Length: 480
Image 1 (cartoon, rainbow, N blue to C red):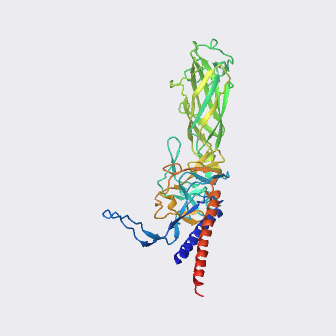
Image 2 (image 1 turned 90 degrees about the vertical axis):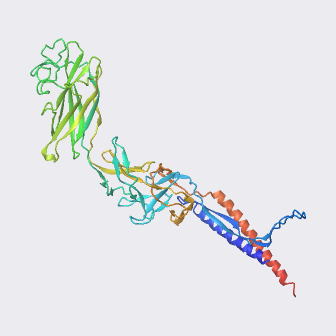
Image 3 (image 1 turned 60 degrees about the vertical axis):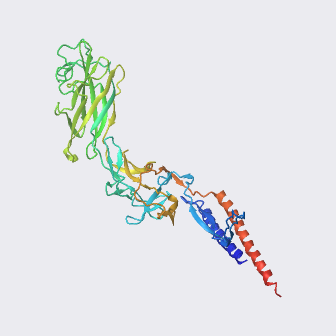
């Protein structure tokens, strides 16, 4: 009789524990990144009244099963269910969720113990640190290199450190992006073939000179003088077409240039047409190696209107040296004027710069986080630059992690060790989904069902207790 009472007591305690777990799950139904728990039971060791008996083949007597009376039950396990919760879109740039395996790595400052979370509701403090609501720093990488194709490659073998949008030991002040000097300018488009070539001698213009009216002294060999262009290149003939171009020196100072084009010669058989160009602008001097203090040159087209690129006297990749005014405070620099994408057809002139590198300095305006975990800063000069890379941790047995409160987990001997971090989307780590948060994975309908079952289990065990008490009362009442 006492066994039934103690069995019911164990049942009451175990169902109460399960109810505690259910209550905690329901209370966290809207907690970001929460992982629900599940309670399972197991019977306690049973008292054996008699052991099993083997059958006797000689006498034909059958065997007997053991007689055991159970001593109740207890909680077998409280498991953490690591299934992914549904996503909530917030469009907040610092909100992140993980599509797949992995945990964000956070730490209290630079010396704390790493902890792990699926809650991606991060914020930016006044120093530029990416932190949790409790002030823990999000960890990742900030050291990178630029490959030959201009891609940013982060060194994921380096130690992970707190991510900061404003500065770090590798890139120093990230609120400003340094200027980049112009090294190339590519022009593309059409030069109008219907334009009449300029002509004359030493400054006397013929304005509408045609191939027939030019005398034999006019030539297109790249020399100045009696070739349809005066020695100074600009004094007597208005350019047929002017292309504005903006370049930058090493300090980010801006220079607005004009590339001026003249059609200056068509050969007697109309197989080749040459154009003369000059580069002019204010605030600096311009020169080429061939022309010295004059930044000018010649290009030539064939009868199909295509530019000729294999004639050394008609350079389509002209190095232009820019000598800034001494008061600017920077030295000369050189950029390549690339004209090989020009054409000459009977259509309006449409030459324009299509690829010009170099830019002025800029200040950080905004940032974004990609699915690959790269934080990209957007600057006032239109440039973009990486600010860091979010790191993720992956465990062999994520269910073996220990809950530490505040949506945090700690590794245990059964979860697997945290040896190194991974880039999102690689080596088993899930990709990031910026602007979303992973909600609790608690299934409310299931929790209510479990609550009903648990309530009935508790109620049934309490009935065993009261019935056993009544039987004992009857036993006590037998002696009057």
